[in-house]
Amino acid sequence: MEKIGCRLGVMVVVTCVSACVTAEESHGTYATKLADGTTVELVGLRCCSALVPKDLKTDEWQWWRPDGTSLPQPPDTRTTKTSQSDSFLFAIHIRGPSDCSCMAVGPWDKDTNPEKARRKGPTFSEQDDLRLFSLRSAPGQTMVSVRLGIATGDWTVVQEWPFWKSASPDSAIFGSEAEVVLRCPEQDRADVVAEVTHGFSEEATRLVLCDTEGRQHLSTVWLGGQGGGLTRHVHRFANLSTADLKRIEFDKRPYDYWIKFRNVSLRPGQQTQPEVGVEEVHAGLVGNPLPRFNVARIDAAVANAQGKQVLVCFWDVGQRPSRNCMQRLAKELAALESKGVVVIPVHLSSPGDPPPGEWLEKNHIPLLTETLDDGRAEARQIWGARVLPWLVLTDDNHVVTAEGITVDELNPRLD
Image 1 (tube, rainbow, N blue to C red):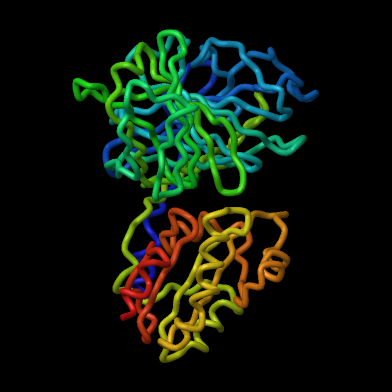
Image 2: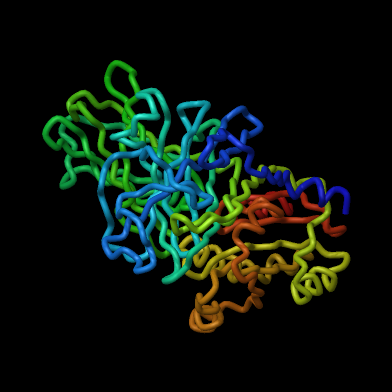
């Protein structure tokens, strides 16, 4: 249990501290400092929905702090809105490395790429890293918790392609061994625009264009579509010509930290007591006993495999790579059983998602699967499941020998 406890990571709850006190009111600063020195602060929020909630009794462009108190100076002066109802715009201030990736997750949706503010308020300078993201809430909800993924580590190259001057969407095919589909970059006036569809929705990603002089170019990016475990991003590279391109690179990195802002007020004037918690995601189950699931059926399946190796597969029926993995495991099942390996699929679902039983039956998958309802965050913290599918292999004493491996890597490890 001690080893398992170490694996759970660090969860620090930071109560709001008084940032300033005036004769009229006092308010807190809702920030946390990460282990690498990066400081992340939730500055404030405003209504971003074209249909303002009836009980929002304030100016429609008014910003307020997470505790509901008024924010006199807006962090961002734009007055854009979204057609989605019950949508709110949040502002975060990041102090630390400029190369920092974020993902915001709310109760109803997520924002995979918070954009940098283009029209900052008077309290922020040009050098300040101020980012904006929008999230929806349930109709009538007046308080919310928001999770923010932060990635500051090194980038890993997933795929790279050469580029030639005559390449066009009609003539160029960019193949990939990974879950990456690239549409040929095109010239759009003075900029280069590229689209990439990938299966790394739980990790930070970027597209890099390298020119003939060896310089790297980064883009502004927005979400172009999402579904079935795939994400499409549209990248715009300012003041660049396709004639100068030599190489294209697609990179990824995990979110090392998850910050949770609890009890954020969705109504100005409605005072709450927000808290800030940070959990650091540690890698390294290898050499430790397989953590308990605290789900009777799953823990019983592990216990019944006494004296045998266990292969746990975290998957999601709504994600194409996960379905492919389950089909591959079904074909390898007899061979794995002959080597003394018990396969335990664990399905990660969100509340309201349909169970995977129908798909398993339709595709003749002879694998019993258990479900962890809304278990993605827990699976990430305890078992390190940064992406799906995620395979964890143990020895016959149920001590982890490998994690994050592919089906292709299974037989070499078992042999």
